[in-house]
Structure formats: structure tokens, C-alpha cells
Image (cartoon, rainbow, N blue to C red):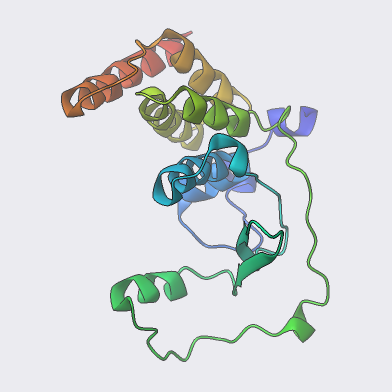
Length: 201
């Protein structure tokens, strides 16, 4: 925990497996990207909150796991490179041939998994909270996180202050259970104002 309190921007931007740009790399380091993916999964696949679980997979080879009613699992595996999913999205539903490097189990003799440390990486439980609350809470989470990451990247706050900012906004910005489109726009603006107030203190 003490090491994370003093982690630098340069250290946080050194993802061991992915090259995703500064914003997403910081989201990955803080586990906010997993939190946002949890919310996406709920709505894309019509899942209940208790059907979604996050595990840390240091090798970044298994990108998703689906467990069926009989208990069997299907995994989506591949090298950590966004070119392949982007190509698939552009060519969908076809799978276009490519000359990208191929995955080999011989190169990855061990695939390991860990429980996420949610007491240290508090963005993940905050994202689960926003998902469970629904309404405009995920909008608050996203807007606050964008301000937090931008502030961290310009050395305005420390690594562990990012979830503090997000949590503050989730508790203070007006909650709406059934927002319309205009409400989301106003929520985003209100959250960014509240986040800037947090940064002044």
C-alpha cells in the first residue's frame, strides 16, 4: 500500500503486456478498466450483478471466461494485442486472415490467476457499487475517473487519491434512478465540476 501511495506516472504507465495509451494503461493499473468492463458485461450480455466475477491474470492471455449452467467453461485466448479484436470488429462476422504472431502454449507453460486486492485497488468495488446502484451512477463513476486519471497524469494527485476522488463524486453528485439522455449530460458536467473541487483541496 505504501509503495502505491508514491507510485509515479512513469511507473504506472509501464504495463508488462499491453500497449494501450496513457489513459487506458492507468485504468488498467488502478483496476478501473476491469470495473468499466464489468458494467459493460452486465448490459451487453444481460447479466445479473452476481453473475460477474473479476480475476487477475498476470499473463494477459485469457481475455474472458464464460461459465455455462452445467458448470463448463469457455475461454477466449489470444496474445495481448488490440489489433486482433479491432480487426475482428471491422470484419465481423467474418474472421479475416492475418499475419499477426500466433499464440503457443509452449511459450506460456503457466497461466495463473489471483483474486483482485479490492481493499487496495478500490476502483473495482466502486465500479461494482455503481453497477448495482444503476441509474446515473456509472456515468458519475466514468466522469470522475476521467478527471482523476488526467490529474494523475499531470502529477496533480497521487495514485491512491484517484479512487478517493471517484468515491467522493459518487457520494456527492445527484443520483437519478431513471435518467434520460439530458440527465446523463448534466450528470457528466456536474461530476466534472465536483471532481475539480476535490482537486482544489
